[in-house]
Image 1 (cartoon, one colour):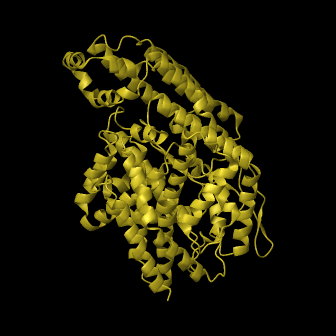
Image 2: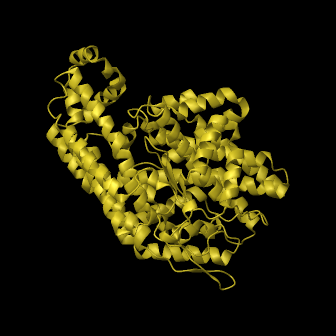
Image 3: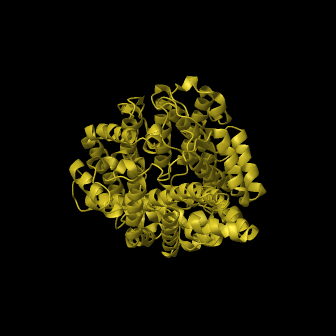
Length: 599
């Protein structure tokens, strides 16, 4: 684990991503930027013409694919370079230029949907006969025509596209405040030693066995968020208002309907998730009581939630070791999957360690025509091994979809993305449990699995419920003040975790540090994805090759059909509450085993 945080220029190139695989230099990027501007201009020249002939419509759709093919590496390079050091003004500007380019493209093609909707059914049928190449785009056209009631006139669509520049502001402001401007006081351990508190070190500090250090880090972090609480509330309020504006403009009943309709997911899935988790509150409260008992504390605090509840099992895992564990755990996925995984490990798909100014957290970014890029902030913990397999799950999903589908259908929706990542986590956990029989070590792993349920199924559902409440407050014309947000968030923590944990006032500020609240109803998909992943990983381990074949078909599917159907093809039906309820039953069983091991 790094004890000092290097600058970007000091980072070991072996552990940085091979960004030059996209563009060898910034100058090469700028040349391509100018070319892509030309494609956008050419796309705009089709305005008023999409209904004139099948050949014209086909040429436009093919040019649109050309834009995606060129635009993805262009945008990825700018955003990845900016994330390497968010303070670097050169890449701040490049990132802003890219955002502007994407908005320009939206504005230039704002006519697309209304013009396609205006083509009469008989005329479109004739177009398919006239230009057989259009058959490839039938699903694209069907999806657009499904949106008829939510599509405005060309002038109104152009206005909404222009408003996209304003809509990006809350997320951008949050990013600069959170990643670049905020600095936290050092935490102090029980021996008086100081430890830097950053986004990358916070969770490892929360996992420390030193309770003094955990409390100090907790108060350090939230003390700073408390200083910016009103600013953070204003930013989150602006995010919810812009989502509601676009939902109203497009005649959706709510921002939730607008977000989920875009990915062809019924809103019932969102509500089913929250209801199923509410029904299982007793299991979470039971887990909290067990944690309090096993930690041997008179009072359990929120800074006690991440530390392992099994003593003497502290695991430090180097990145090299983590890669070996990942390859072993994912062996049931078969040779094709493993060979791609090795390629990613060996050819610098991954930016491994934290450096000063680097974007916090972790993500995977797929790029059509290139390999994916994975950002980590690796700190040698077991949690980081899970993050590695999680993000490589995303990366291989992108790789397989990009290599199986044409550019038209390669980009899968987020709803299925979290299944691919979390299935890998589930396989890793079941691999570790299968080879561990020693009671203390097994208890340690079960505790970790329980924590996955707590942080992924329960906590992300709590986030989803909070995000829905924020949205509904704005829809009802209520103000999202810091006081109101803290009150609601504090109450949700009490509901989810129960009465056996102290109501630390700092936890009510946690909403202010969650970037996913700026991702437009994103977080629920972690919880649904986790539930599906539990089912799919168990099927892969039990059934072997047939299950793997179905699952690789799912990973290769892109957006070639709707996400619920893609999952059904892999063997799980998320249109019912069953996968969530089954996962929660497993959580209850694991608590029972943990109780037995700890007696």
